[in-house]
Length: 112
Image 1 (tube, rainbow, N blue to C red):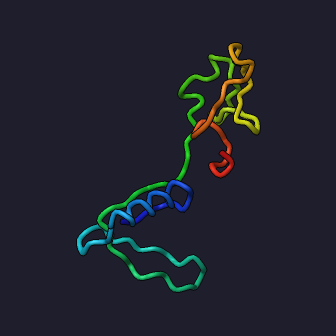
Image 2 (cartoon, rainbow, N blue to C red):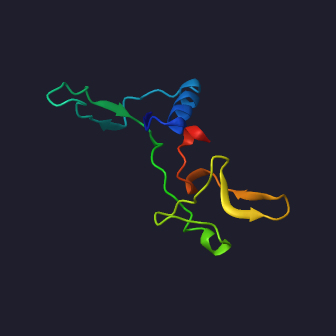
């Protein structure tokens, strides 16, 4: 199995599948990588039977129409939050602000 992405999700999924016994089989997809350095030696091609893409985040603040609830959304679709992940809209019942998390914020995953 080839896992693309070295973030939290990629590392967690790699650990899980490795523990479950995922191993490359003779038939599958042959993947060739270029050298990381100019003029360097590229690694030998490898064959994988599965590819897991675990990289990239797409903001969805516009998709869920958060602005219709008064929540501040950036041009790219991220919901603005403070250090405690609170939006700009107060929640009257608990005297706190609504909380946003996940792919709708521009906060790096390590801070969450």
